[in-house]
Image (cartoon, rainbow, N blue to C red; front, side, top):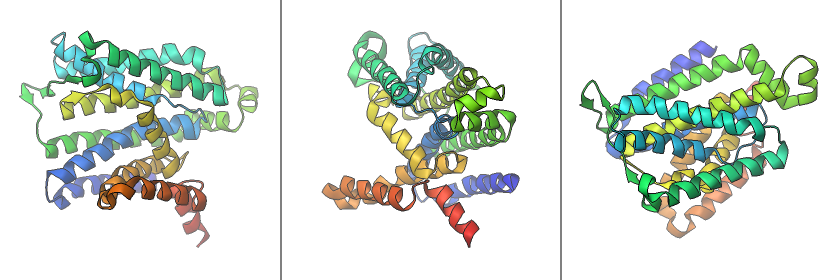
Length: 306
């Protein structure tokens, strides 16, 4: 079943480019894929491990800025800067997560929110390194001496990364690691009696979700050729959490669907002009009222009943 779903998803990603009439559609599809990469990792943290994070955009921005600074200021080749930036963000997440994940509930949410605010302020004020509020230019990604340009090529790159991220996440949740995370979500005390170390497993999934965000951020920076501190804003973190909840927590496919729907929806609502955000909010409210478990789990439940 899982193999068939993954094959169908791969086929969908491969067919979509032939349906796009112009580069605008490629740009939107790339944005969907980048958001989905972050949401898949974030869903493991929120949906499976039950740990809230309101500052995940900080890791997203640090991945982009880390790769941009290494390439621009230090002259590193871009194909080296991305893994280096992702690894550095993973290390930071490990250092921050050790004390932070000892907190629970609202306290954990406030701590992660504070992390996002700190990163956003630092990126905006260290103008000699980051370019300040105006952001900084990012050199193109160069592989084997060739600069990667063009939306179709970038779509192929991010689609492949998304598919691999989904594959890894599905394998993870079906492994003993996934069962440990679900046990933590149910009850940390009960999980501890079964020999599961809550602190260690929460830290691992926190680092993994940060790695996904950093990778998406680095790819975004090199694709767009520019990055600003807005990528680390609280609003961006909130958008990512909403995507996860909207699509369905504890569902890898829900994270993908939530990222796709909430990235595409504003594109369709632009015709409403001044009422765009009002309708967007109404859609969110209606979905949470009639589909409180999220789109994918609710639809799956309905289909199972029928």
